[in-house]
Structures are given as C-alpha cells and as structure tokens.
Length: 281
Image 1 (tube, rainbow, N blue to C red):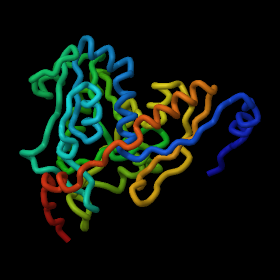
Image 2 (image 1 turned 90 degrees about the vertical axis):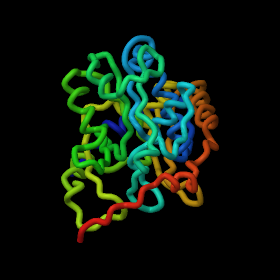
Image 3 (image 1 turned 30 degrees about the vertical axis):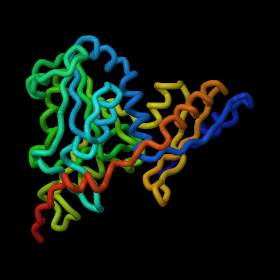
C-alpha cells in the first residue's frame, strides 16, 4: 500500500527551533504506573468518582489503578488470565482478586453484574487488554468459551453508551486487532503453549497508552519510536517527546518519577498459576 508522506514532511519543515525534544524509555511496569496515573485524571473517571458507578475489572494493570485510589492489592493474582513463564496461563480461581466496584467514589460490596445492570451512559468500566493497534482497537484474550469479562460487559456498555476505558501499554502493539481476530478462537487451535484462548476485538473503548497518558498529564506530544530491550528491559517502550521546554521537561521528569517501578514477583505469581489443560492434537 502506498502512503502519502507529504503531510508529514510539511509538518517537519514547520518545526521551529524553539521546540524542545526528549527521548524516554519506560519498562512495562513503569508504563503501567504512568497509565494508571492518567486514568485517574480522565474527565469521565473524575466525574464518576464523585457520583456514579465505576467498575474496575480484573487485571494486573487494574491493580496499578487501584494503587492510585489508595487500595493496594497483590498484583500477581489481581487477574484471571495471565501470560507468564513462557505460556498462556490463568490464576487458580479461588485465588483471584476482584473485580472492584465503586459507587460515588466509595468501594462497594455490590456485585459487578448488579452494578452493571444499573449503569447509565455516564458510568465507567475499565478493562485492560492484551493487544492494541494503530487504529485504537484493542484485543482481549479470553479462555472462557463465552468471552469471559468482555462477553459479560460488552453488551451492556455498548447498548447503554456507557464509558469503556482500556489502559494498555504500547508493549502490546500489534499491526491489526481485526485481522488477528480472524485467526484465533479457543476451540480453534490444535496446539497451544499453555491454556487455550480466544481473542475478543473491541473497537469502541477509550484507549489509554503511554502516549495518551503523557498527553493527558503534561500536554506533551509523544511519538512511539522503538520497542524492546534485554536484561530486564524486555517490552520497553521508547518515545520521543516534543513541545515547549517547560512541557517537555515536565513530561521527562514524570517519566523519571516512575523509573524503578518493581517487577511482578515471579516466584509469588507462579504459586497462583493453574496448570494448563492439555489441548487436543
């Protein structure tokens, strides 16, 4: 496919010398922390934390959002499905934490399905993802044959026009969520490294990656320029920042402030991981 680069070239020609520039690198846990901070600054979330329903689904990234709310849970079992130890896996059911339901900013014991049934168009549900593409579509792996969490919340959120927010790191960037969905299914694969998993494509969520997080928190323009690394920097996201000097400096310092975010404790995590069911050949 031919891409017309002339608009981009014209933009480059228009860059003024007084613009400031920076390059930052965030490891996956650092990116999750940054994104979680931005989630709490979204207008939809601030409004619903004052009045309304706010449902936080299971997910490791969700645990970082809970941190920002002053609620600290073990990140390694704050999820159902998980990719770890070189395979697709899931947490032992009785050890899973969440979901978490908030009503008017207060943690509630209301079951998630009950809260969801009371949703209006102003209420908010957040759910992480396993994939995000350049179009802003996200994909969620689902071992449950009915789609798991996504299968439960998608009809209600979509039909009512409620807010679906997805925090997801650019470490999970793929070329096309819609194309990927054509080749997946938890009854499809003959061989699986770990547990079987389908793939749920979502096209209506408000996506918050490191780019949107930095834009929301500082106003800087961020561009994803590279990924990856070794010896502890696997999954790193490298971004170029641009803006006036104060904005770029603020964004750079914000990225510095999340450096050193601890990794998930692998030994503790594996205590909660269920042995996969053998896939039929």
